[in-house]
Length: 155
Image 1 (cartoon, one colour):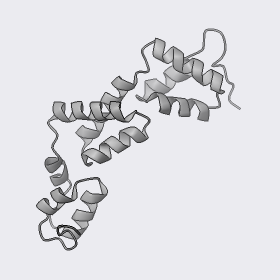
Image 2 (cartoon, helix red, strand yellow; image 1 turned 180 degrees about the vertical axis):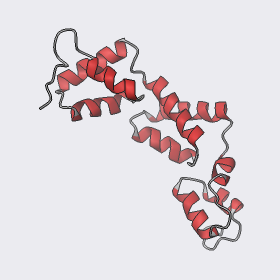
Image 3 (cartoon, one colour; image 1 turned 120 degrees about the vertical axis):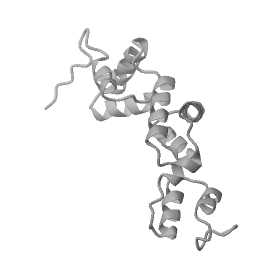
Image 4 (spheres, helix red, strand yellow; image 1 turned 30 degrees about the horizontal axis):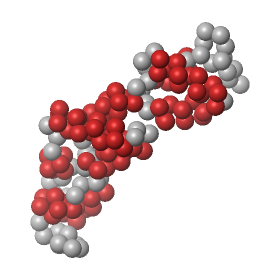
């Protein structure tokens, strides 16, 4: 059985800091992780406050880091990347700003990201499904894979 020492004198914030040392998280995601770790709401609040005060928890900074990782790793359309950031607990406005900065800084284009997912010799229909499932715009998919059945305008 794990002993909860997060509330002990001088130790408040340690759980949050250990969690954040592994990976940048949003405030929402950190709260969820701490709750899953068995902390009460009061303990979670104390942990979050300490992490913010120490500068270890900053939604803008971590959203920028996560957005950059998504852009560099590639394989997703812009809207899909934004949705992933929001799902990770970042407010939509912060997610949009972070993603726009990462796209600009990395020179990302939807065309290049989509083209990198195309496998020579793969079925055009399969390629189209893959691109669409990763959030690429249907107009771009039609452009990259002309003549794919079911990809005509309006259908």
